[in-house]
Every structure is written in C-alpha cells, then in structure tokens.
Length: 129
Image 1 (tube, rainbow, N blue to C red):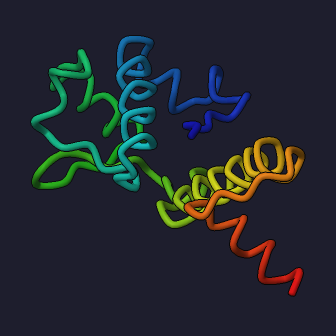
Image 2: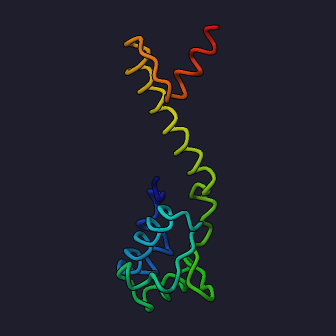
Image 3: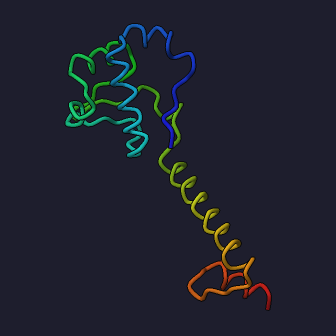
C-alpha cells in the first residue's frame, strides 16, 4: 500500500519547523506504519532502526506532526489521511480475488479445462446446471 503525503507538505509550516532530517524520519516511519498497519503508531524501540534520533522525534512532536506516547509516538491525524487497516485488508483481498479470477479465465475457461481444486471452476459448473 501507499503512505500518502500531501503535495503541499514540503512547504507546510510544520514540515519547515521540524527540519529535513526529522522529515526524513517522518517519511520512513510513515511508510513503516502503513506497511505494518499500526495506524500511525511508531514504537520507541523502532526509532534507531528507522535511522532516527530522539532529537528528531522530539522535533516532530514540537512541530505537531507526532504526539508522544508512553511506548513511542503517533502520527498526528493519521486516520484523516491514511486508509484504515480494514480498508487496506479489503483492497488486498479484492486484488487477490481479481487476480485469481483472471487466472481462472485464462487457464481454465479459455482452454475448456476444469480444475477440481479451483473454487471458480466449481462455481462456474454449478451455475451451468
């Protein structure tokens, strides 16, 4: 999935206040959070792995881009700009199902083959009866 960044972010007062090094951390942390579906939560233990420092995290908090939490940080207004974990999961399922249906059409329907292990073959056959 994608971590969305507004095209006006580069000159937003919060980004300018945080500074480039902190914004680099913000971007890497956002991509990590989107990938792992943490709803914008960044565990304290992950900071160094993302190449960040406590000073950079504090700059993000001071600029209003992150909120400090006991066990790490959270992106400000994550849910306003990023899809929920449920939406991401639904998109992945829909894409996978679409790909499976396309493969079924290509390898079974177009070749007049029936695969007993293919859920689409059994569905197609039951609708023919």
